[in-house]
Image 1 (cartoon, chains in turn blue, brown):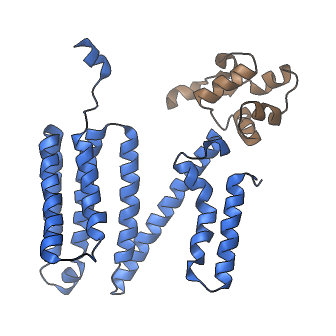
Image 2 (image 1 turned 45 degrees about the horizontal axis):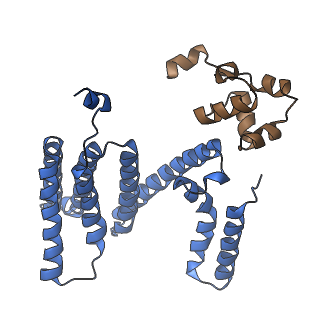
Length: 231
Length: 71
């Protein structure tokens, strides 16, 4: 049964806009069409428009969304592998997989509530994911029988981030300072030495995750409130 | 989890599923799912249901043997 509420009418409006744009041969037509379909689940996933769905409907949105996410991730992974075998760069699929996995992991960890532990897990996971993706760039060298320097760099990245993550368990704030210096150094290097304002990827893949990790590590530890009151 | 929602619904003036759903601000399908035992409501919804049916949550819902394994 179709629920005729405010969200329904906004989605209908988006659908009409999408159909008109599609008739005009505009590629952007896909955006309002997808938006019309995803409007309701997106609002519920973000905790907005609560009065338009009850708890069971929200649970259904959540479960179907999780299954949809898995399908997109597996699909993107298979397409990335196929593209690599065809000798074409699979970077756009890597970006999609990276964004999906990182967003899911970060939201999940932050919802758990223990910020410091979340910071450690995000730090290690970030290093492993970046290392794996950097290592995959050396795939062609391995196939060609050459020395895969990029794979070695990827392994090095993993080792450094795992070590920092383990250190962060004991010394979260010093590690946060090290990461802060690393992030500032990277901005300084990019802006002063490379004079590049075209590459916004550094903000998305380096500065933003590092800022989030630093914020988590700097936060107060998740202490047992009962134990604290006893002190 | 076993529920006596249907029994209480009839005992309280033969409320329809839609009427009960409107009283606790959920969809009729949610009431259907709870009555069939397919959906375990949140504490908040269980309390709301108990309140409108003038009973207690314990009267409305009881745990079964298998529920103890899942906890």
